[in-house]
Image (cartoon, rainbow over all chains, first blue to last red; front, side, top):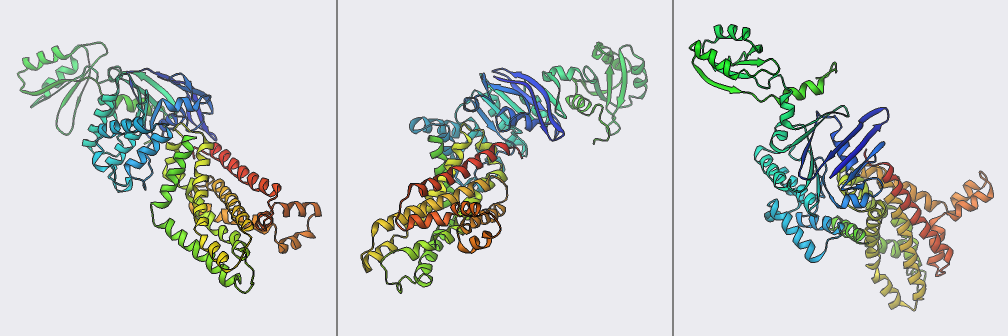
Length: 311
Length: 244
């Protein structure tokens, strides 16, 4: 379990993280989502005990990171941004070093090492220097290092950043497999990641917590939630009729492919009526879809709201 | 103590993973020999002792100790592994101690490899081996002080070059403090009490006392205090300067 209480971090006059509180329970994969510079890494660094908060504190499995830092760090597996490691060492040397610092030895050490190596499929590169490995492998070494002691709490700072799609999928399925019984906090600026992994999302912008919800919950806040989009040839007349239809807020047309999106007024289900109208008009609909909402749009409107001159 | 040992082993591994450590050892041994025999008039003196050998140690360490310590923290800062290290369950003191001990063990190895010197002088005459042993002990303690300075300064910066130059400068001052030239210079400028205190701070003075074979408790305390003080300062710096 992770508990953050009024976490605040100031750098001079800049407040990087402003009075942030949240709880993450075992079994949850919580995504810390925000644009670059929102304070995600600063939150991670404070919760992991690397930097001290200016105010507030965090607890990991009940251990206060300021008062009992060693106990907190013992139950935590943390992957810092960019997965740093000692490049001159081999993968084996690096993992053994970390295991030793964590107090594992002999049989225990070997068992944990084997499990982590198998999980991340590192057996083939075990005796290669880390500097000689590809980015994807280096990230896997970092992950193996973070899960080596089978921690109850896992914090990963941008775990898939800079990886190719296959590697991303691998890392995600690993996190998925680890999720049961553990508390996992990942930071990301990728919305697809939230979809793929998280059952809870914290949206952070300019150091403030803007939302704490499930991905589905967030999608329902989108103006596209419940919208119907379709592709059909010669939809001009139908478009005008749709706009006048009850429960319809507006109709948008994609200028590139002519795809029509019908946005509902809040609380109206419009899929049935729209289909009926299209059939009555005798339009040849090649494809029709009910939208769940666009996370991207919710994210953008939340994180840029009230900010001028920001790209 | 386990994390300290783990850190120490890793640092030693990092020293020897490149040929640099071997080059380093060879140059150290070569210079120690050359300076003793050619500059130090080892033969011409006609005395069976290792004093000319030990006399050059402060100047050798002046360059070698900062080279050994410059990367210890600066590199961790630069590559981001500092964040990795300090989110493992170990204290800053343990980490500092592990790194310091690794560097010290390296110097101890270099010193141990000068044993042919000791064999030579025993072959040529009948030296007082007690004095020689004291010389080695003093040399090791002096190296420890230089390394502690380096550990502290390396924690200040992410640049190894800056760490090296600053450490050389500070160590140079610590050596110079005891030289007559500096004493003469400051004698007229500061009160005699302060001048005396300054000379008491000199590494050279305490090292020479031990190297003469006089194991005075005060000299041992001086070196121990110097090491502890500089390492503590380094720990404080690391705790204050983490996130940047």
